[in-house]
Length: 178
Image (tube, rainbow, N blue to C red; front, side, top):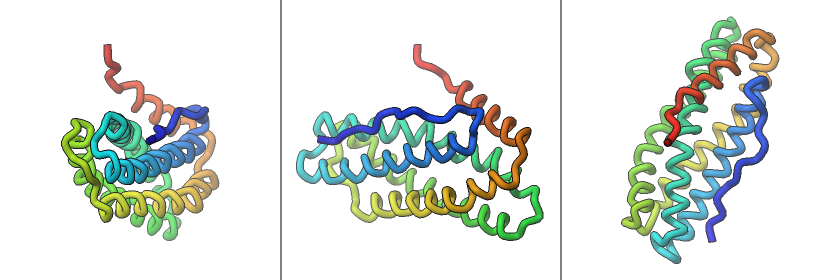
């Protein structure tokens, strides 16, 4: 059986750095579900559980996952790049490279997940899943260990408040199903 991650209590937009950290946990939950889906497919094929898991992974990375990257690339990184700290600039350059790699891998993975969600495909390539998951795991480890503490040190209350407001606005523009 594939257990889909639930929604745990999350920080609010008033604490945007903690919200980003919590999102990292949810991303890792989805990566774990992806790994379980791969194993499930080998035994059960694209049954109903596999289809539901694929749909949940697609939904997450097509919405919250994209918002998370936008939070960083559009709002957080520019704030940090305004400092003259060379280490900060190198870190962000590395993280942006990770984002590009994750986006490229997601495009390939997404096509396969769409087939699984429709009951068509029965496997996920080992290398594709491993590459996607390991890139995210390494990226999140780096962000949690270096980026978020750096942001907490460099950003003032007003900058954090503005960051939280922008993150909230990004999500409130999402079209809700009727």
